[in-house]
Image (cartoon, rainbow, N blue to C red):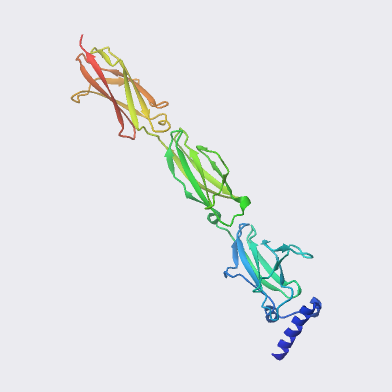
Length: 339
């Protein structure tokens, strides 16, 4: 025990005198730890292999006795060291001045590949005394880098509706990578795109619906990581149906024909083309009358049919128009007159 204490004292004295030579002394691990230690304060010794996650490391100089020059040289076999000043006469090393507590701090940025790195720390005045720590780079979960937090799975195929998609990104992403690029296989992404990430780590984009019923995918990409969500564009239905009869007054005769035109209206966009429209005709007491021919489905929100009263009895006829998949209807009154 006395010999070990004497050896430590001589080693530290040599360092203070500036006459230490690496070839003169190879300290054992317990002796080295009396001079410098390296640790992860959080206790974590792994990082996702994403190329940007950081692990904070601290080298401590116990200062027994204190070094006159309290500068630590850090180096790593993998990833990138962030902080400090580039060192000299070493490949990729950095130097960090310890604070008043004898602690020098550095961050290790993960490599983009699975593997490991050995980080070393050494007092600048004693390059032969090393503390080391092995950090593992493990397979990264893409959702830790980028994930959708708002992703509607359906929207009306009306050519106008804007559906908002929002993603959240890792707070560890560097400033230069904090832009998200969106794409869609159906519908239209509304500019701007790419989208800058806000202070809360989110980016949003609007997708304008197409006018056709279809399905697609929305993708978001940041720093080489892509996530996607599905969306289906469903039939856009009317909120209001207006009906016009031409003529609105006609003779009650077997050969009478009346053109009925329906306009199917939404609060935005257009009812999906090809929507089936129904036509019914009845007397005021609900008795059906006549029939329809030349019935069309919707085009640009409009449909039509030819009404054939097929009666010689005068009176009022109510034409009611509806559409598939909705209870919305519209009506128009037709007056059949006697001869």
